Image (cartoon, rainbow, N blue to C red; front, side, top):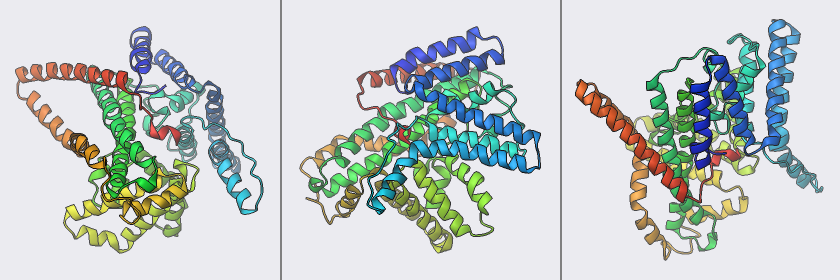
Amino acid sequence: MVFSSLAFVYIFLPICFLLYFFIARDIKQRNIILLVMSLIFYAWGEPKWIILMVISTLVEFIGAKIIDENRGTTKAKVALGVSVATSLSFLFIFKYFDFFAFNFANIFGLTPKLLELTLPIGISFYTFQTITYIVDVYKEKVPVQKSFATLLLYVSMFPQLIAGPIVKYSDIEEQLNNRKYHPKAVGEGVIRFLVGLAKKIILANIAGEMATKFLDGDLETLSFLGAWIGIISYTLQIYFDFSAYSDMAIGLGKIFGFTYPENFNYPYIATTISDFWKRWHISLTTFFREYLYIPLGGNRKHHVLNLLIVWVLTGFWHGSAWNFILWGLYYYVLVCLERLFLGRIIENLPSFVGHFYTMFLVIIGWVFFYFEDMDRLRAFFPVLFGFGANSFIGVTDRAVFLNHIIFFIIAILAVTPISKVIKKKFVEFKSKSNTTETIGDVSLVLLTLFMLFIDTAAMVGSTFNPFLYFRF
């Protein structure tokens, strides 16, 4: 089940809201309902892999109890190592085993023996979440969770289970059994969800259709203009797609009383690559910084090697293919160059120069990310830079661009903080008097209903509706 479906919006959510807000009488009952609904949500698409998530959570639950009962001993260290290794082994078997088996066989001229397992949805996200729990218990940052059901709720909570954000246990440990509800927060959560749904259904899907049209066809006939329309469309698609899911997850979390961390902070207005990664997929970069980079030594020792490890794994986390590793190495080189000298040069230049530099390199980076087929990756770059293009402007490319010019204008505005400015002006308007506050409240209700209508119409008419990060 996906958020951008009629079944989720008009069947699953209403049932969940009814049980959660009107049937449950206390926090314990609400947790039970949320857990059951989360398991149903996951089982809707892949019921057989629920057991894997439960086992992974159980391993961390038992490991944390052993750690708590044996503080400062070798037994606690062993429990930590075994628990983390077990969770990572599940991820390795399902996501990476075939990659290593295939490449090992190729190197030695053998016939590869592949498992060909289906990748369980969300395993890359919930594996990292279970790791944050047991590591923070070991470091005594959080108390051990005595209820397995509560820990399973943390891991399986449907708003952020499938595609994040990666919510550290410490982020919501207190909220699991002690959270408050306020109509204003619920209203804000509903609006955040509907805004995210609109970003996904309207902006991401339109961009995705154009990206597929230009990037998945015959590259020998692709024009220079077509290549740029395609990769810019993908640049917009992946942002709107992933940030939309994060918006919906954060909105749903707020409805149920949880505060999830922000996952995006307008990354396409960044002026350096380092700045971009402070704004893009924040929960992932936070995880790697706190649970890998700093334990390896951070900036204190071997920081160049530590960065290499982090960026290779960042790329590899996104998929078991060489293009993702190249993508990670690409950003490793750029970040190192900025740390050495490039960053200081960019900072002394006008901000628009830094912005152009950053967006150009980010767009090039998405080329590595998009093409898992290395032959197509190699074939696309010459076209992108005008060397291998069949023509400079294709027969239909100009028409496609002009027909979508309004979309591109709206999409480019949507990646900027213009919505924050509008929201600030709206809050200032409401605070002027009781009359303006009433007008503002009525306007908000009407806007919410309008967004729901638009989202519904888009879902009914849409046949292109993938979530990109589901496959990671």
